Amino acid sequence: MDTQSLRDGRILLAEGIEGITDTYKIMRTHILQRMRANSWKTLAITSPGEGEGKTTTAINLAISLAREVNQTVLLVDLDLKRPAIGRFFTDQESLGISDYLTGETNLADILIHPGIERLVIMPGRKKITHSSEILSSPRVIQLVDELKSRYEDRIILFDMPPLFAGDDVIAFLPYVDGVMLVVEDGKISKGELAQSQDLLGDKCIGLVLNKANMAGASVGYY
Image 1 (tube, rainbow, N blue to C red):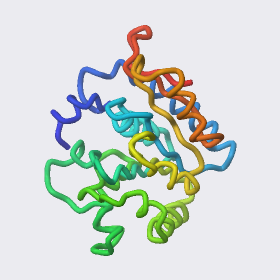
Image 2: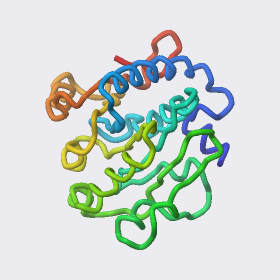
Image 3: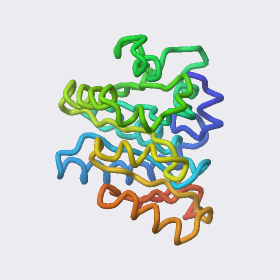
Image 4: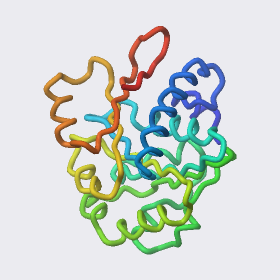
């Protein structure tokens, strides 16, 4: 893994940012309780707009969940127009979900094992222009079904595009159990927040307030 990229991206494994670990533990506990109570296995992470920290939150949540004993986690990069997760874990060119969705490779060939026990990464690679059509295609539906059925105790996190950047999240909404909304403190209006929650409906299981100054923490979960 690229240590500098982890540090620049505020990923939990980097030195000097362990102060936010407890916040993610609280978030992890809330999410695990909600998902286990409903027998849910899939959770999408999105934000209203760009740059609000959804990918960093998705990665840190995945790491925190994987640290839970007997809990395996798969983190999937479904921000097809702006794939970013892979660059945090490797500085080498690798295959990604775009190669699988276009039928150019097998599922097992695109997985990254980052050296974190119980965590597997499915990175993106090439930009896919017609992303919303891809996300509602039989190929993606088959992929989600396969991922859910392969390991019974696995939680699958999908890093999605921003909600207002297109219709990708809405197109994929029927195939996930819940959605977590990441919001940068002070960036969007109350009206935009209400619109975001209306679009997600009862699939929205919680809100992450990111880049907020709350007793030294940079994230808060509600």
